[in-house]
Every structure is written in structure tokens, then in C-alpha cells.
Length: 429
Image (tube, rainbow, N blue to C red; front, side, top):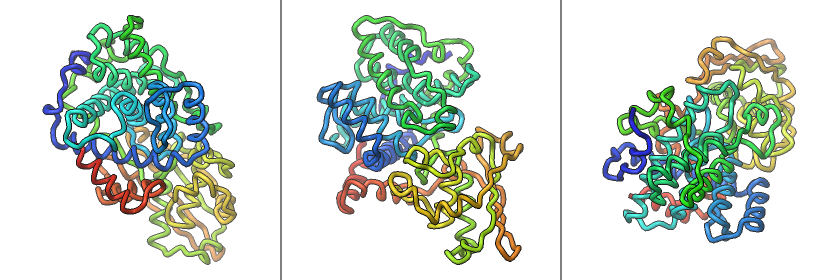
């Protein structure tokens, strides 16, 4: 079995293949832009005010002049990213590594937008980020294999945050064992499907995961014990870690274009194609009498049809499909402030949601949906089975991901500033 702790402390920047470095920079660009959008949410305001008041310190909060302690900044920055559901993830761990490790690294090293390109610090940031994706993805898969309950990302990306912290702060091997164990033990239990059924600001737990990971490292450095981390050390999961350094899990992460739950996105993609291929203008949309959405069980649990806040808008199936049919996409404002558009809700009232067993069988490796639309004159439109875009075998183009990042960055920056930011992040190493 590859020893994850030995790997953690011996991985160097020069060992990273060019494709891995390129993907790491793409993840940073995506996460930084998502945080720019997330900083506008009510959730971001609440958590930022909280950590500044209750956890003071000098670690920066994203897209703010405010600071907090290392643990406070990790908590707030993780929640800021998590508040706008457009960040990367992995299909098998059914969650998000980056939303936990990026805030941890900002607390430990600093904001990458402020790092000197090609410096030793920038290389250390990239190396630790890659390490976090490698440990975190495997820990997430291990947790899902060992638990019958679906826990949020925070339950396992706490371990990834501890791993990057142990590397950056140069803990001993024994201290690292304890840091990983503390993080696994104290990581949030956070049952995901409760938040799917009842969407609130607790979301995917990544802020708590980042905070727990940082606190675990700081405790272990002082002698606090907590080993072992079962998801890391158990022989039951040895196969997951045996290919560290050979199989790079960071390049398996998916990207999202729309700021809604990944489970809704096969249906939003189907809606996007229907609108584009059939010129569904306002007049045609008014003639719709019924819309059937067919997808997998977990997506149907996104059952809040008429959202009353940003969280309900992002954890809905019907709402983003209606947005896409009406406007061709899902703009950030639709899930942050203008989720009560009456035209959207008129379409939602015509929807019924249905489960397809063959789509259930394909989940979580792939996500599928199809849509049937009926019009007043008796005609119909139907999509073929449609997959989520953004997976490694069905990727968004680099140009489309850059356009997404630019669009989100411009929620905080001018066009020229967004361009400069993108250039800086791409030139980090």
C-alpha cells in the first residue's frame, strides 16, 4: 500500500506532470471566480460578519478587506464558495474537494491573486492544492464506501484540508497521522439528503470541513492526538491509495457552468438544447401546457419548485429548467436575488417530475435526464437522453470555462481587472 503520509510529505512541484499543473491552475481560476459570485450572497455576509466578530485574526477573507483567524478564514471562505453552487467536483465522491482545500490553503499560504508568479510560494500553493485533490477525492470515495448515509463534502474534505495543512506546516509523520485522525473524527456529520429535502445555508459542509482541517493541524502540532484516520489507514481502502502518484485524481474533477446542484444539470442541459434547436421564444413558451422531466432519484429530491431564497433556488430541479427554457441559461442573479420571476414560476407550474430506473442505475458515475414538452395544439417536443456536461469525457471547452470565470469575476471587477486576474492566475507557475 502506498503510504499516504509519506507521499504527502515527499510530493514536490517538479514531480507534477504538466497536465496536472494546468488542471490545478484551472481549478484555482474556477474557485476564485465562484467565490466572487458567492461573496454577494446573504450567506457570505452572515458568515463573514460572524468570523470577524468571533474569530479575529489576520487571514484574508475572499473578495473582502476583512480578516479573521486561520480557522475563521477557512470557515468563511469555504462557505463563500459553497454559497454559489458552481464549483468543481468528482462524480464518485459525490462532492467537492476544492471548496475545502482552497480556503485552507488561503489561510495557510495566502490569496493566490497576491502571490508572485513562478515564486517558491506559488509552486508550494500549487503542489499542496494537487495533494489536497489527490487525498480528498480518495477519502471521499472511501467514506461513501464505508457509510450507508450520504454525508456532505465537509465530512471528508476536512481530511484533505488537514493533509494540505500538514504539508505546508511541515508536521512530523506522527503529527500528520494525528491531524488526519482529528479531522476525520471531528469532521461534520452533515447528512446531505436532509439539506436536499430542506435547503438551507448549511449546504455541503465545506466551510466546516476546511475549518476542522485547519484546527486539526494546529492541534496536532501542539501534541493533540487523534490517530488513526480510518479512511486513510484502513487496509479496506488500500486500493484507493495504491496509485498515488500514478493516477492523478485532480484531472478527473468535473466543472460546472450553471450555479445549481450538479444533479439538476442533465435536465438544464436538455432544456438548453430544446430552446436552441427549436427557437423556443416567449410566444411558444406561452403555448406550453405540460412539461415532463425524467431523471434519476437523487435529482428528483431537488423538489423545491418555487424557491424563496438562494439556497432553495440552487437545490431545485424545476427552477433551473424553467430559467433555461425562458432565457437560455441561469444567470447568477437568478439564484441570488431574482428567483421570484413570475414568468419562471408560470413554467414551473406546468412541470411534473418523473424517475427513470435506467438513470438510477447509471448514477453516480453519470447523470442523465430527458424532457418532454406538450403544446396547446397537441404537438410535442422531446429530447434524447441527455448527460451532464463538464465530466472528463464530456468536457466544457477551455474557452467556455474562461468565459464563465470572467463573467463571475466581473461581479467584483471591471472587465480589464478581470482580464488581468485571469492572466495572473494562469501565470502562477
